[in-house]
Length: 167
Picture (cartoon, rainbow, N blue to C red):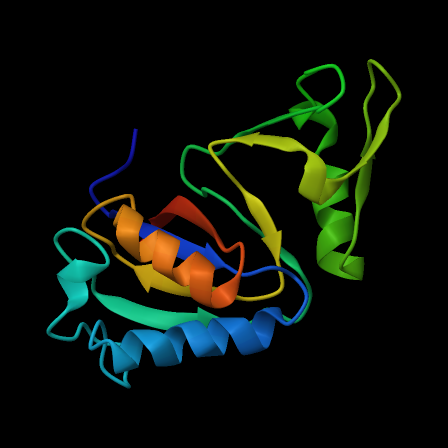
């Protein structure tokens, strides 16, 4: 269960190819639509993207591809071939992603080798090279029409909701 000090972030993750440019373009689009100010603070149209608004929008560009996923409460990971729970063998794969930018997991049950991006995550998780982070969102979803608009403009973006520590 989330602690009172936790917050909910929404990460809009563009496809790996051109991700940094797309994430920056997503931010520029949010500014143009008055969803946020150039500083990332909420703009007059903030609630048109997220019911109840948010605290800040920023662009995240990690040094290597990263797993955008829930932090508090974690997530489940399963093999797409046989549905085996692969959490017990997932930590080294995540470490490999962080050190090399790519990783594969061999299922201990069926021995199928799967790229990390193709594993099944619950709640949703996505490997990405950059993301538009909507920090401290009042709701766990973008409005449907906004998501459709962003996908038309920027391609198949994924939205990941993550409960994060507000330390």
